[in-house]
Image 1: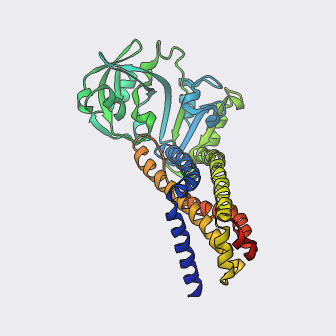
Image 2: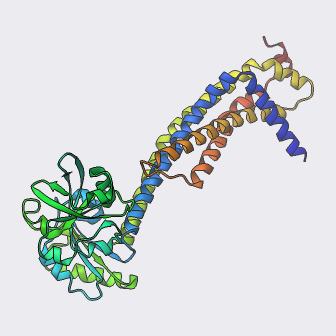
Image 3: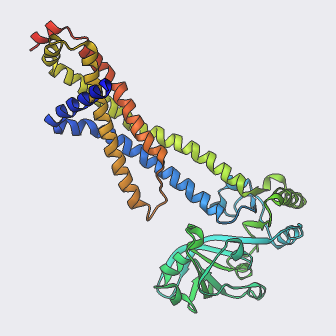
Length: 399
């Protein structure tokens, strides 16, 4: 009970001192506010991007094996395109299709490209695949229909648009049906629009039969990846080993990679773990600057209130009382700035998340409050000790 009362009195005293000089209080806390705001936003950015990538891969299903050129994820995924490593073709697709227990075999041609109508042009993604691409991606139609195996065989000039691409090119998904879009010299009839998936590439893509890309778009008739859908998770390792064995007959080991989805997610987690550490370290610089600012102000406060300290000591206050008084002021200043920074960061995240993948978690909140308190203690203890060590008689005579 005594400790609770003492803490309450210390907090009331600190708050009363701050209210007497609100401008100084605000400016002193500003450094911590900016520091906490920076750290929390950087954590939210890193966490949001990590979640976005995880959701993208999880949307493909757990039982997925990906064959990619070069070293797989380290070669840059779609962005890496076909610049390094093996260039897969229909011979490779037919070879891996012989692997037992496969549910889907999906060759994918991918390009970032301009997609246009008579009066609108947007940069999006061209995905050339077979009809198995849609069930593999769990694509659900929102307007029209999906093209099928017959369209692949006929090299049909038909296209299914991702929801965002349809929205960008036409007023509504239904309005896209039957219309013609152009990709370079290729003219394609829109037969369907898929539901929004949350995956930027799928939502912003034009999906066509891979055979329709053969020609000026894809003169070498190659693919940047091959997806293998496996019906049971226990079969994934066996399928992966068999795919590697087949492809090694045609390519060197460093020309391709066969990767399980779980391996990619593990790599993503490792990469973002390092990125988060770097981002937090960068944001911590502003916290350090804020802490130094609090220490300077507290030293100035001790000097200004030297006579007050002397009078309190003469009336019976102990060194411990003086130490706790100034240390409490430092901690309250720091925590106040931290809470304001956390509030601002939360507001920004709520607004930005509509356009960009950002996310807050409990760790960021605990970190913001904990670091603020720690800074208040660390940078406040030296000024507080200076105040506690003042001689009562000399302090009273101080002008």
